[in-house]
Image 1 (cartoon, one colour):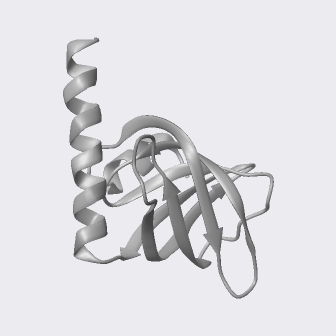
Image 2: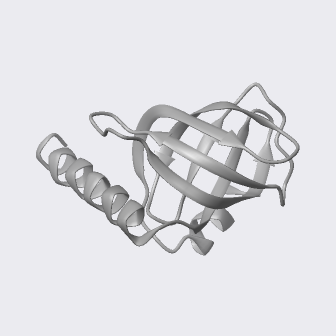
Length: 114
């Protein structure tokens, strides 16, 4: 998927971030590195081959956040080499709120450093 097309279908603005993501499904489990994130999804990279359409559970190891943020169901929307895009489908409102607050803090701090 082209970056231009990918940008058009996003519902939420992503922020740059590098942190660890744990994922698991009935078929596969492992870790990835998040490269950008929003409350609707993220882009990540992993040595494990991901398949478009695969549904996974996620554990987001966000900096200075304990416990990790859990996403009950996410779907792999695209794959390009080691990189893949995830759409967050189902997570508890409290977890979504924690992620949203974390992202807003990043946006706020980055606006002072640009």
